[in-house]
Amino acid sequence: MRMVDLIEKKRNGKELTTEEINFIIEGYTKGDIPDYQVSALAMAIYFKDMNERERADLTMAMVNSGETIDLSAIEGVKVDKHSTGGVGDTTTLVLAPLVAALDIPVAKMSGRGLGHTGGTIDKLEAIEGFHVEITKDEFTQLVNEHKIAVIGQTGNITPADKKLYALRDVTATVEAVSLIASSIMSKKIAAGSDAIVLDVKTGAGAFMKTTEDAKELASAMVRIGNNVGRKTMAVISDMSQPLGFAIGNSLEVKEAIDTLKGQGPADLEELCLALGRQMVYLAGKASSLEEAEEMLREVIHNGKALEKFKDFIRNQGGDPSIVDHPEKLPQAKYLIEVPSREDGVVAEIIADEIGTAAMLLGAGRATKESEIDLAVGLMLNKKIGDAVKVGESLVTIHANREQVEDVIQMIYDNIHIADHADVPVLVHGIVTE
Image (cartoon, rainbow, N blue to C red):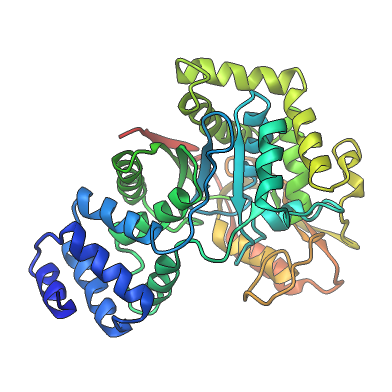
């Protein structure tokens, strides 16, 4: 088998066989096939695409390129959730204890953030003492006993995907749906869950800017999951404005606690219920999505979800008293209000730019080496569709530096006031096949 022949085959729009895809991924992972040939193949895939079988084969070839996590010692149907990323995306902190409160095992492998704010692990580390450095045996035991645990990502999951992702980034092939879908799904499948729920974002703060593109990606991933034996569903959700009010690590932990109490932002609660009901349904705990949502609302109402969050924190070395005393979370030195300069209605909040403003404060990482300041961030006081008067606060800046003119300017540049606003729909659709 020669790589040049396979590049030509895909360039001409023909299908690659399972054996050919395995040959490519194995050879590339070992270093036998050079970057320039895989770059040419990636461009051929960008233009000629792959069919469902090829996408599933590519995904599994990347899964098999490294370690896989064996969760078979954990009892029950393990359901994982993946978000394609956004600003103020606190859903995992709410969903994990919410679903675990219904005796569904949530065995979560999470990473650190790069960009607007921290990843799930960074957010959890805003809780004093909380740690994810636990052994696989401890992880399994915690999930079996308490239905919930979070561990850091292992180093050798899908090494082929890491290599291919880095290459796509510098060869203008990131947007190829087949490559995005197989990249995301390879990591989820290698992490060992039985079922997968996907939160595919669309809008200014998302990778997929249009609903049509988001639906195409969601359908591709759902089909890959189902084709390789993982029950998979997806929600298409809006990211044209930040989710909830909080952008920043300790601020988002506080918002997650509020949501578990039934006192969180309406959009964050709505999305958590939309994703959570799919997780409950796929775990076989409910016979319909409607029944699943009722069960989730009940554990919020009766306090079981909040108690599960306390257990989760305690079991991984954190201080559970922050749930009742969130003032114990890291606090910023300075609170600075950003007042509206005009009367009207908030018509636009450009999510990714507002996320970048939070990153300038230290809430996220510009590079992998950047240190995160867990206390800083932004609290939105207005969302799209809210009326505002001159002098009313649009945003509260939580900062550990006194001079924040750069952040204030970014906020003014990216929150637009008008005479009226079209309030975005949060859930654009559900994809089940």
